[in-house]
Image (tube, rainbow, N blue to C red; front, top):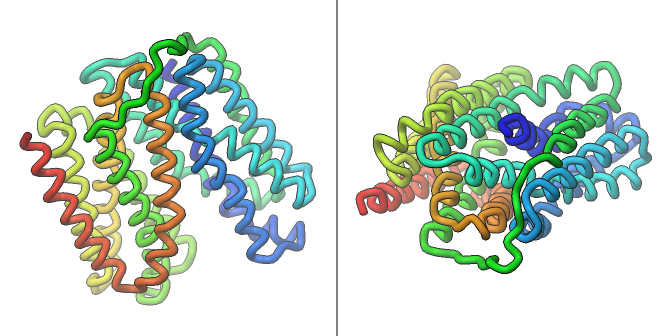
Length: 360
């Protein structure tokens, strides 16, 4: 079961992370402009907004195993086929792959909620978040190495998800055709809003403006920029692995609040940092925020949803994340450099709000 859970999580984040370093080679090989290259990302991410809740609904109705295994097989084979396709066919395959990949990480969290209880569940959510962060740090490096050999090789790496899909067929879970009902209680609604806010900030400020700041203020090249951001994700993984300790001592809401405090301090310090070491320390603080908030939000969702609607709720949460990922860069590009301070203030406000929730 753990192999299926962690394998599904790693497959779910592979879709863009392993291809990103290869895009310049893909662009040259297929004679594409910047917009066409960007569409290879959009074609993959767009289906997640609409298909993730559907996949969750199907998993609740007909069982986790059949939906997860089908998703992994579709994700794997359509991604692998991109290595041998022309551009137009590749776009279609990327869209199909996006459907297959739309709910993989969410279904992995659902399985944790189904098969683990209490402190063991919290630990597993922390470990799963660690696996996710390590994958996000490792995939760009692997993709770059493969692209050095041939631009097609990063696409062929998607076939690695196929064995996980075959293993997932054996996952035992039943559907809830008669009992299905979806309840969006207060805690679920809060998790949806906080998840959207986190990824609006992360994809807008951290992934867009931090690299720009590193280049413009400190003349940092692409390799060192990547290493700085990778170190953030490694620290996220370390913190996430200790989620059980945080939740057992402080509770879920207080753990979330400490993460938002980390976000707020980091985003305040980064634009005020006088040198590169200070910036690096500030980004590591951001990693602390990520390592506490994300798995703690998943734990909140698992705790506050019934078994018969869990997959639908968690995949809908994933759609909220995708919305944040989409609107974040747009909002930040409109606000400009002051987005650091706006995001810091927002994070500190959410720290106060979630801290008070933790006292109830």
